[in-house]
Amino acid sequence: DGGITQSPKYLFRKEGQNVTLSCEQNLNHDAMYWYRQDPGQGLRLIYYSQIVNDFQKGDIAEGYSVSREKKESFPLTVTSAQKNPTAFYLCATVGSVHRGNWVGNQPQHFGDGTRLSIL
Amino acid sequence: GNSVTQMEGPVTLSEEAFLTINCTYTATGYPSLFWYVQYPGEGLQLLLKATKADDKGSNKGFEATYRKETTSFHLEKGSVQVSDSAVYFCALSAGGTSYGKLTFGQGTILTVHP
Image (cartoon, rainbow over all chains, first blue to last red; front, side, top):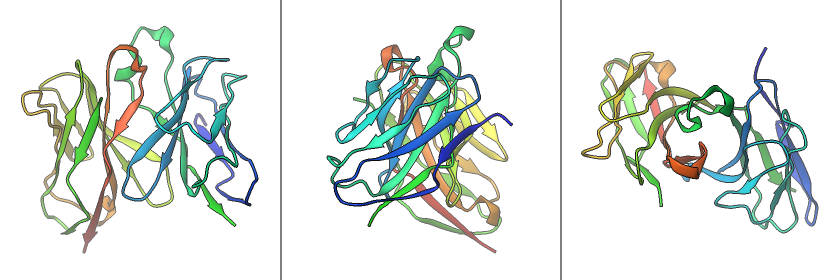
């Protein structure tokens, strides 16, 4: 089945520890996004990537890092510099730019999320 | 910058009641507008979308019309069911170099009782 797989579903972080959240897609989509969801605040953009080996900061990138070495994968690392990491993290993708449709008209597809908590 | 404002919730309704969730936006240019739904413990699913003024998006009995004059995209359903209980997000995707980035409202929790 085509889709987006986020793992793990639940993750716990100790003080001073970096943790990495996985996002894998088999939709052949070019663009990938990471959002953070907190209660009552909607979703906020952390990082996004338009193509392999390229990514840009979103609105709340501090304390996070990403890589995009393969089209299918866009892992997010929550570093120890992120002082309030407890949240629900969602990965999303949007379709290929090569089809001629402006990517902003296309809906994003979301994974089922990873819930990160502090021990 | 771009922003989306949704009506404050939570919203509690009885089954078969009429639903309206208000959404207004601020954006430069001509954004595309979306409604997403989130069920407990899951990611977001696209409910409907509209890409230009006066377009009406519809799906599963839900409707929303892109009103440029009032910068609104209110979600409506004529008769809600218990299975519609979820969190609803209004979002916009602006043009130019935004490259599909979504700006979300804060979400509205809907609970439908039998």
